[in-house]
Length: 77
Image (cartoon, rainbow, N blue to C red; front, side):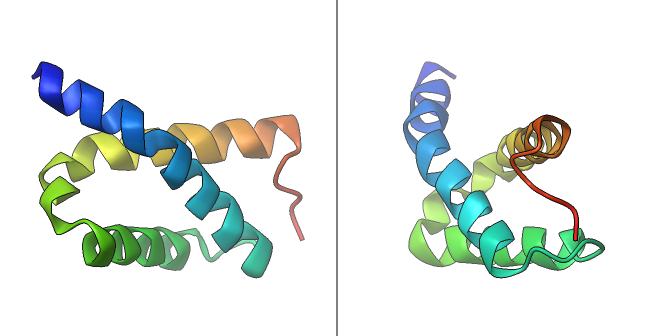
């Protein structure tokens, strides 16, 4: 359990960067599912061993996107 927490904490900055990069590339609203799929498949391609933790990663992504939308980091187009 502690190892999972440690791993998640190590990859969060990279995941947040990936989310922002995808949003900058595809800022249009309504494509969240496709963006999430891209993020998931990118992570799986780079680090397949972490996919056992996907439910946790997906929640972190959801929380981050909500925060970015709420605070104006992501501008709706």
